[in-house]
Amino acid sequence: MGKIFDWALKIFIIISPTIYIAGVSQRVVQMLFFIFWTALLLGISLMVKPIRRVKNIWVGLFLIWNIILVCLHNPQEIPLPFFNIFFGITLYYLIANYTNDIIGVCKWFIYVMLINLPLVIMQLLKYDPLFTPDSQATFIQTIYGFFAFSNHLGLYMAVIAPIVLFFNWLWLPIILFITFAPKCLTADIVFILSIFTMATLRFKYKKIILTGIVVALALLLFLPNLSGWLLLKNHQQMSMEALKIKSEGRLKIWDRTLRIALVNPYYGHGLDTFNRQSPFFTKDISQKIWDTPQNDYLHLSYEQGIIATIILAGGFITNLLCRFWRERKDVFLQALFFSICCILISMFSQYFLYIPRLITAVVVILALFEARVYDLKKELIC
Image (cartoon, rainbow, N blue to C red; front, side):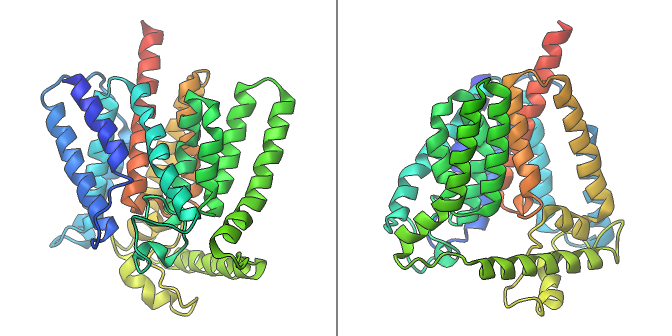
């Protein structure tokens, strides 16, 4: 039965970011699948003995705090994000305690990459067999694989890149291509930082590292232009002026969000309130409707208060760093850690915690990190 749990988790890793049903909201489909498969894993876990006894006080405190927030803000109606949090924490503990072959499970992130590769190539050549021209996917950009939105594809690939390269650095050209093709600047930056930090730790030849940095910087500068030329045929790349406007809009929304968050600094405004209130205090910033501040830390502070931010950033992340430092020589743990670093950095300018296909990767990687640390500690004691 232990192998059944591992196989169910592998299937979950493959399907959760790629599931698609025509004519139905992608976020709804992914959220329902996330809840259904978590319940399935829970059912399987009831038939087997746990391999570990992983406990994390900060995860427990985060759940307790959100229960308190629901009682304070929405005692008559439980908001949907609470169920996301509840099932996310449930999945976290299930994976951490019941996964048998941690490395074998992580190998399936390679298959997610390979499944997206042919579709990315077809989209690069302006042929898309999956999404229609009037679909929601084409609203932002053209390269999105199975992810419907280009930023989601780039961020997901940047996050799993350290894990993929742990198995074989020959995967670098493919993961680099898929990460850079969507032209997501945040994904490009965290990819470069994580990959070359890993290379510095793993390889001894400085010339190889320096050459790799030059190649990566060149790709960072030229691949968006190349893909833009191939796709648009009229060189309509994002100009510096457009980038400036986008950055100014984001800085303004961050400032506005922080100011309003400080109105209720301790317990926030309540779960699922930002997207309902933001049209009233962001309409003068730009024509865009801001349903998220594009910063998970600010979003967390706005809806759940500074206490939730302290639990997550001050408690959970600090605890994670301390445990990694004690077992830092383990190469596989390094790969998981750099993936987590990609997540934490991306959260400053994206909305990882509010996208089902991305939160799946977050929960799985964090839980497998927890399990790996537990196993290493157990081996040391033995």
